[in-house]
Length: 205
Image 1 (cartoon, rainbow, N blue to C red):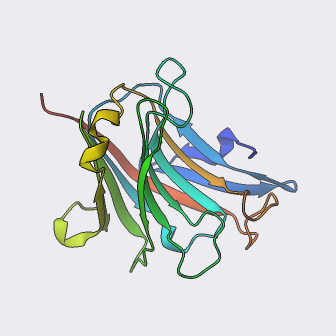
Image 2 (image 1 turned 90 degrees about the horizontal axis):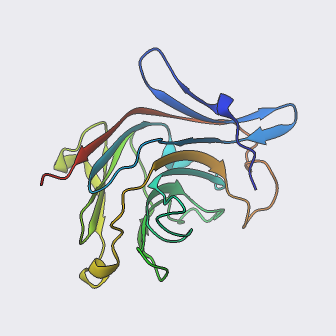
């Protein structure tokens, strides 16, 4: 388990959201923000600043929807964008993954890729409809198709299992310990990621 601290989440004077993993008094603590509002079908856009492709193998940046207990159990009704190597130290390990967990318990659908960035500004998005979820990530704070570097959508066979219920949005930065045990990142360094903007555009009816 991770220790979470509200001191690790803040908004600066430019209205940018900061998520930070800190090492204070010999304790590592992580960051998570959960929306009070529920969001449904539509397009979700995050403008990110940080060297997300070069993070320590144990660090995870999660941008996702997650069900409240009335909607479903863990492992259901979740749509994930995750910058993470999941403890893999192999230089060829993937570091960006897209996952959709079904509306009822069962297998998820996912795709991941190794990304090498030429800067620290990226945009990650997904568009969620009643029949599929389409993901795309871009160099820079733009959704210009010319800047796209990883695009994927759920297969047609998944359409009847796509989540349908509105749920909160989560953003977190945490330490994955299953593969490499211990409380600290392997490089023993604090990590900070900045979300310049989160935008939700409801699906046109």
